[in-house]
Image 1: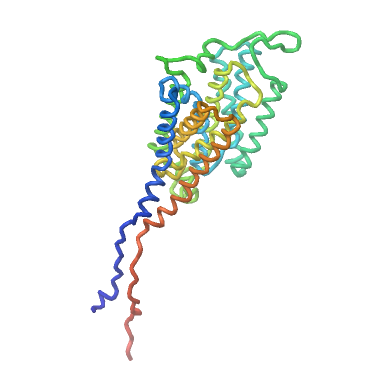
Image 2 (image 1 turned 90 degrees about the vertical axis):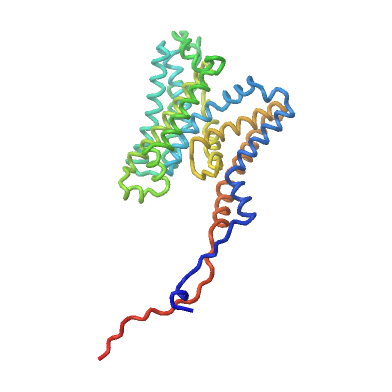
Length: 366
């Protein structure tokens, strides 16, 4: 055997076995298979499930979760987490209601005020996270309590609706017709909120997955130190992520206010956990294993389909949180258990090599 052959380290070309292929398929397509199976089951057992009208009902039911979930996805992309989205919804709903009912302003003015309120919360988050260097979870938790309390203070803890009394006098304004259309209007039989969220989802998908800004956000979430060394302005992009999150929550709150036609106290509280569940469920879509808009869309629809089917089957309402928890656990197992297992099974193994001979340098002779 020559010295060259002794130094060679052949790689054992191991083809993925059955276990690796099953793990890879389950990791990549498992959630979609479960979704397809659920749709098929409900379609066969419930005659009203596979209808156009029920499809619109499902889409309308996930509009608010999806819009807020897109914002949460943006904050997760930079390795953060926005816990304040529920309080943004509370705050913006109350601001829009007060603008029209108490101050008798137009619907357009109420929309501008609502977007401004969302940016205000986002600005506070940016100051706490980027400027004051407070961890994301702690900072947004503080913002959550701050603006939940502020929403109650500006309304004295009461709901705001047309015809309410302020002191001893009735409120001078009401919800305008054009504003209410945002929550209940249709375009060619398609609800306006569904069209708005579809446009927003497409814009967010293009921004995060097909632009330099989106790639920079993901780079920061992967390794902020390496991103900074690569020339990415980490602080600016982290601020951008929380601005996107605040604006998405504000848009969702405006549509929710238009749907309800009133400002209810703590109406946004449930949307925090539901939007987080949709974003985390999206981790398992097509093996992405990262926050992504397409996954958040499918995760939101998945939850909507399951809850709609259970409602048709007359399942008790108090089982919904349990079902959402099961779906989230399944998605997390697919992302964080099947994903690493798939990578371990597909990793090529090196064949044992012969020990190397010690390097013989030049000897100096006298």
